[in-house]
Image 1 (cartoon, rainbow, N blue to C red):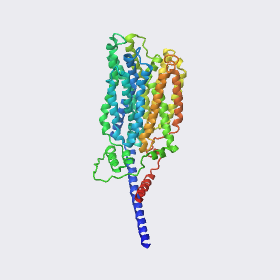
Image 2: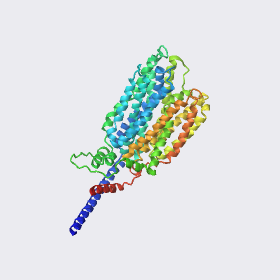
Image 3: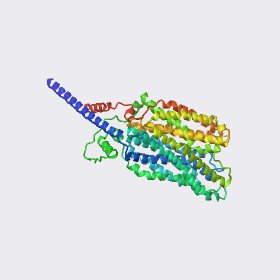
Image 4: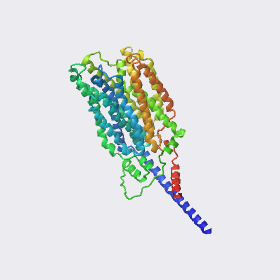
Length: 549
């Protein structure tokens, strides 16, 4: 018995020694992890930050170009393939809503994959999908067995999947590489490329309209517009050019240090990446060096349910998701139907008939979209850029929703008076541009930024994907609703009531914003609602459990 007690005592002492040694090791690793993250959070603005903004921004430029080019291209398709020179309600809805549906799928899919497989491994895959599907649209043809619009709808859905993947990937990569003080501006600069993409789509449409003017005007009739067929193919097909330029850089961008550290748990590799991209030090990898595993919780279904099962975490996910949903009801309701709204209010409408009327209408729609982009969309993004790291995300989002509520109430309830005369119509266009401005100097930008900051590394991309997908659900609802409601009581007669509905959703966005935390000048770890001092304790407990078993 004494011998047995001696053996038990010896075994117990051995376990205690292992406990102390393991705790000491994990504490050192946790300290090194914190020091490495501090290097990222406090890094000075460098060329690498510029590169991240450019590489991610080109993707959003391409996304916006491809999404909003259809706003003008659908009018061109109507002249070539539609009945009475326009697409039917369902045809127009199909080519416009296919991309948001695909985007919703892509945001959920790529958001999850980026957390499971890695940001780097997925970055560039979504761009390849966009390039191939955009090129395929330009080459689509008609056949007895399948109508060209059906082919376009399929390819636009596939393109949407790629576009959807770009949202969580670009947001998370830019946020995880950014230092704390400039994170808002970096993410805004990436997202602001949307405005330039929107403007470029309208500019290219205007250039193509001018280039094919003689071809269009020489057409024998409005039922034989071969020149317009060239125009829409070039308009859509050129959207793959910026994607091709950015593809190499996306495929070669390094994995984010936070993913390497917190999900792959490779402290040495993460430290080397930080030194190589954010400092002037160059470190070579030692292939024989042991992998140092950082203490961090692992993602799992049970952990996901436990994390978001807590109200303090779930309310943030709900707040980001619903705010984006409410915003996109109006943002895409306006953006994908600006040609319809401009026509409805008589802004830039042509009184010409025949082929001259076709040319004039396409030119006026292109000019109208350029005015809307230049006067409202683009300035809104860059005013946000100036203030987002000073005012904060939450005040900007609240202000935007409040002002948009007021603007849509005015445009909706005073619609008849604002469109009664040419002078009043100019006032409506001013309010319309103002709404575009405060969408971007407001929730359109902040609903992109906040979900890229408030979730822990293991769920950051998934959380952003869920939030973004909620937004695209709003875009789908808006597009289907706009298409089905706008002609109630006569052509475009219900537009004023649609604007009133937009006002209601802007009002609800105010309340969902109140659920969100302010994220400016806070590290991503502080925003995750987790006690990172517990990481080393959890790792020690897991190690001890394995040793005991």
